[in-house]
Length: 395
Image (cartoon, rainbow, N blue to C red; front, side, top):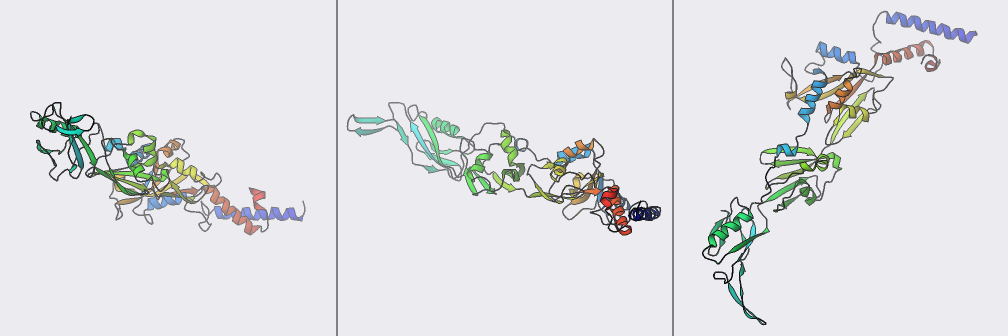
């Protein structure tokens, strides 16, 4: 072997002696070696020491915890929150404009009229239509010979029956037709990320949630980034728009006074550490699982990642945290939490499918000890043997 070969061997020997002397004094790589973030051991040690990470809850995620979080964070279905069991009955209210027509059986006595027809001469008509009238604030309308008729809480059919009942004995076999010409009391408000915020008048047809969206000119944002919020009285619920489209049962009938709001869901999570890429990634209104989030970030790096050290940093609702000590809450009532998932356990792959990612989560994958040691070894040999092709020689 030539002089060059002897130099390499001497360098390797020297590097090995330096390495042995360093490793004999420490169990891990030196802290001054640059790293992309904390290791799994450092995070766990900080949690145990409760010093720099005081007040942060540390939770090992298993299937029970993942399913509990998924159930708590699942958006309620409209069919459950706003049950609808009866047929749509349109109720007339104050401000509605209606017209009333009444027929009599011949010979008409009360509402009959004689008109002249050039071809037929005098003709008796048996129907009269009264001028349009607005329902008064006390929920009444006025019908000749029937008086003031209450329409409060009544459908069109019930009002027709009430007028006919009052005219019985006065008109000859009366029949009544009530028609709404303008609806002012049964409206739905449509606002949010729609092209035209507007009021939609309800009709006896029974308008539904997607009808309101169409009346508002559709949404401005991509469908998978929009959620629909329905407020009815003191109850408010939200569902992803694409879920409503896929499940026709969630396209529920609307009621007077409903407020339909299209919400743009600007939801993002951040991925850091030993992953295919480190960046902020948006996700859909219906939400995604941890498995989907890891896949969208390029997955764990085979050469760098510690599969035991997958962490999710989150400000969690205090009501979801079970602890045997007082929780340190933020002003918003949330608790800083670190969830840990060990992907070396095959069962954890099912856990990641159930674990829900939420807006502003930070997903961090720690470097493996081997990867950190590799960095240290490269640095050591580059000092001991400058100019040597280390990657080709050792890796």
